[in-house]
Length: 92
Image (tube, rainbow, N blue to C red; front, side, top):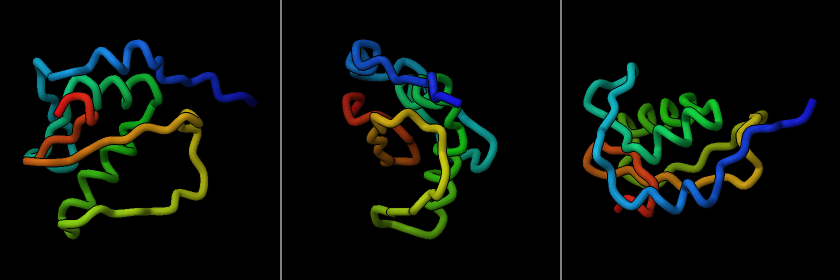
């Protein structure tokens, strides 16, 4: 089985701010931007946003977590968190 999920670098480079903030179920205080939502939608990675949201309940520092299996695109992505918002660095 091949992973055909891919984050388009051209599309990713166009997220330079966000016009919308999206709430999702685990913690209603935490939102994500257009760019983070693109990552979740395209890569099927709402689980990743959930992991980030859940970590905020316990950690005020950067968290590294080994995930033994994922079908997330191999190129990876950086997501930042501040002021209860998950976003792409280009949206800062």
